[in-house]
Image: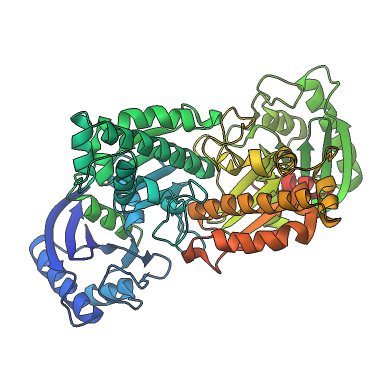
Length: 298
Length: 298
């Protein structure tokens, strides 16, 4: 049994995972604590309550934004309350008395798909998270690729169009500036869309209702994403790509053209050797299962 | 002691490698043999002559175009005499009585730099070969990345400019269409260069002599290469990138602007964490040392 902890900007979730299922869960607010130590104390209290009722975990896995798996530190995360480095792996290991592994949320998602989801048994895997940003986790030879500084797997910041749209990273033309939620909203407006589309779901609804700009937005997005994925394949040659996150949940509106465009964009030697699928994990539990999968590395 | 064999389109070289040096060498023509078995017989005869004089190797490493390391097969190489699959690893192992590892020439170069060259001790490494094409070998966690089908590491076929120049692979806008020898000649002409520049050396000589189009060609090439390298960093987060091959031998004409542009193109989290250098292996022996490095995996 592994305890998974998913640290979000407003809420942090805890879940006990056994046999690939979340068997018990809890949540606390991420904000409103005196400092990071008080937050860790609160997490530990919830964990003790969970384990009193359900048995003790052998390890803890923690997924968080800006987490460095090599150091176990959350590094100055812009969307979390603490603007300094927080060595949360050690803080939780000290409090709970079991090994703790901290990793970033995209890597947690990748490990979750690999251990429990659509990537089971695939030792060369790429998991891409499509949401507010574009995250990714590369698994190569059955191991998560961390890179020399613990920050490998930034597919969203591969430059897709040199000199293109401004990206939040300060550079121009990153994949994330095109295929994230923000990117899709920009594309919809560029395609002549009417105002008031608050999110990708709204654009999808309009596309399904026949709105030409919304359909054009999905076409352009799939073209860009197809190239981004084909480029990633050139790096590590995965057997499978799993898409994860809100944008990926638009079903065949996204996937039907994407499969087609991906196979056109793919270098000939990879044709028929890479499949493309969508996360099979339940939405509510995916982040907890990913965090727990990090814990299995401990 | 390892026997390295480098299979080229016209000539195949053999070298005995000991202590990171080629201590004896031989060569045969790749063409003019009755079939692939006759070619393997001829290679084995040369190998026996070398080893009679110098002692027996414990393994054989073979670098070849279109070689699949997972299968040990040269797969229908367009630039070699045999248009069918040639299981050269097994053919040489049978003839020489020692383990043989076959790999593609870009991966051999990567392993050569890692074992014997500018990548020694760097377990997260990227080696990029700049020549007729753009090849690459990614080393992650101290292992060469082969990918699920044995064909990972095609940095030259990451799409740099969607819808851009025609590439030999049949798609458009690949990095290789811009920063290879062919790409640089095209760029020189686009920049208004005069005719008659037969190769990159000629363009470099003109740049050094003040030719504006030749200087512009190097500027554009370094801009493109910088983005291609920065994109590769986003995948596997290497500690070092080693450039290899003819184009990389243009010294500071290439490297001074490239270092500058690379650091501008790099995502902030990688700043100061990736260095960029040029192969330190002697030109004549690099391919043999790379092949021998493949042999050390056997």
